[in-house]
Image (cartoon, rainbow, N blue to C red; front, side):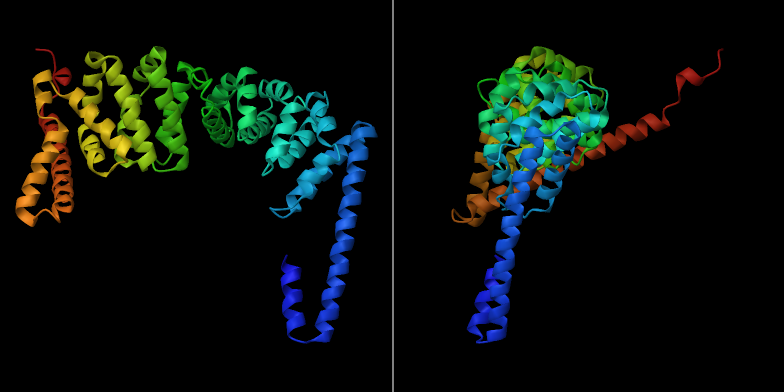
Length: 395
């Protein structure tokens, strides 16, 4: 495309020398295309008819070719049309580790940015061999297999097959024992698979709660990764009693969700509030105190004002559930908003009332947060000045 643009400009300028150069470049581009097509046929023949060493070499050349190809290159489709995918798949279960490594990288590069290739790779039987690799002790191969599952799971047609083949539990294992990149890819792959509504409730179980909380604790709460992790946690807590029990056993489990409500992106906040609401809905008596002890009120109040429409609704419901007695629910958040709106109408008139009411509510949230912080600081100071009884000498 760059060559064509240059050629057009040069011809318009009337420079015959440059026009000749443009023709030359056309010939070179055509020759380059022919060379690439011959290379693709050569690689296909090596994979289909060569011995193992030739096939390993061909797989490496495919990866090299695709890594250097432009984003919109047709090389991926042409390689698939030349029949390179079926012979690459059996190499995944070869006893030769080089063959596994080379075929994994070749298939991964063939699948990237090509929906048809993703589907063809799964149809060729790649999932069972990838499952075998995920069970290996080789960290580098497991990481590549996870990346391959992530890429293949992006195609809607592949999701159900990947789930029913038993991949999700192996991805959950990666959350605890994989490399950093492996963990990130495992979360993203699980998030992709969760979009398959037919199986979404069965993708994850309680075993995923602890590693997900740990990863959420360590990452930036406003990151895309946090959005995926909180989404998975919300799914588990809304569908699994064992999952809800597991979060209370995690160190700072509920606190991590509360911190995400305070510092997360709008989507992370939505999922975190949803997760906390699932806890309280399942057993208010059990989880209400645990949530309150982690200081959830300021963040939830803020969410009623600044969050997405879904998180605002969830935050209001959760705040009502966190009130001490049912009678206190009579003054629900919606009633408070109506009172503030009425005051705003009197102060600035009906036209500016909505904006004024929002500012008043935000000010109330900030004041509540300040009071909470002062209370915490006061308690901390009191604890610091109280003598430690356990350190007194025996009388």
